[in-house]
Structure formats: C-alpha cells, structure tokens
Image 1 (cartoon, rainbow, N blue to C red):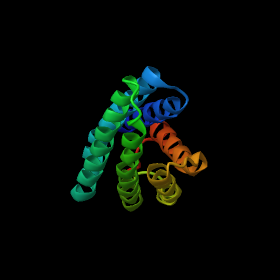
Image 2 (cartoon, rainbow, N blue to C red; image 1 turned 135 degrees about the horizontal axis):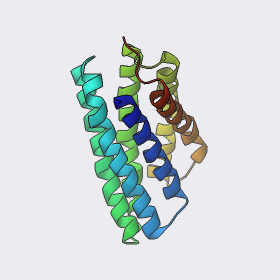
Image 3 (cartoon, rainbow, N blue to C red; image 1 turned 180 degrees about the horizontal axis):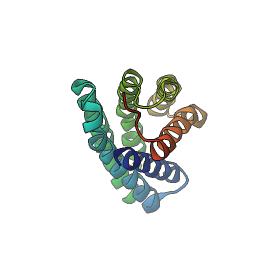
Image 4 (cartoon, rainbow, N blue to C red; image 1 turned 90 degrees about the vertical axis):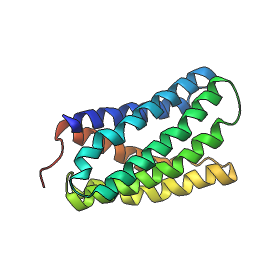
Length: 169
C-alpha cells in the first residue's frame, strides 16, 4: 500500500511540476503549490519503510524533501501574487531535491527495495539535473534537457512502485 501511495505522489508532483512550466501567474502558482504538497507527503510516507534499513538516511531524506517543499511554497505564493521572485525560490528548492534524490537512491540501492538499475539510474541522472539547476539559479540559463533523465527515472520508479511495490530484502 505504501508503495502505491508513494508512486501516486511522485506522479502528482511531476505532473504538477511539468504543468507549472507551461503556465503563468495564478495557474502556475497553484501547480507549484500542488507539487509542494505532494513532495511534502512523499518523505513521511516513505520514512517507515526506509527507517527499517537505516534511520539516518531515512531522516536525511525527510529533511531534504521537507526543505524542498518549504522552498516551493514561497515560489507558489510569488507566482500567485504575480511577483518575479518565484524562480529564485523554485530553483533554490532544486538543491534540496537533488540531495533527496541522492539519499533516496543510495538507500534504495543498498536495500534492493527496487531493482538496482532504477536506483543507479537515479544516482547518475541527478548529476545533469544538479548542473541544470545550478545554471538556472546562478546563470539564469535554462537547459531543460538536463532535467529529462531524472524526470523519466522518477516516472519509472513511480510506475514500478504502483505495479510491483517494494521488494522484500
């Protein structure tokens, strides 16, 4: 059951994130807020599963995802208020997102809760994502193709969780 909830939340967060890039103003803010809400629920839902295999990594994952969501909320509010600060908050949240990707996929690799190829893919795909996020944050340059490998990885993980669930170690 937990795997299905997490898989569903990943799909909601990703769909809302993609939709936010194609919208402006209030619609964008609502999409970012929905993404933040989904992100905020992923970690505590996963925590009991991850904690069984290492409480430190599990707690680190919860903290990283919570900080990501905390940075997304002002981005959502700024977009709704038609302020131009939303990109700074949104891109800043990517730092914590990347940390959460590393913590989660390392934990999944160690525990074999999902096939290792999924977690290895996530660990590799976070590198171009992090570079793309830093370019967006520091150089104000968007390179969307750098986000694609991790986005696809997260959807593969979501579908795996929805259809197969967690493997028993």
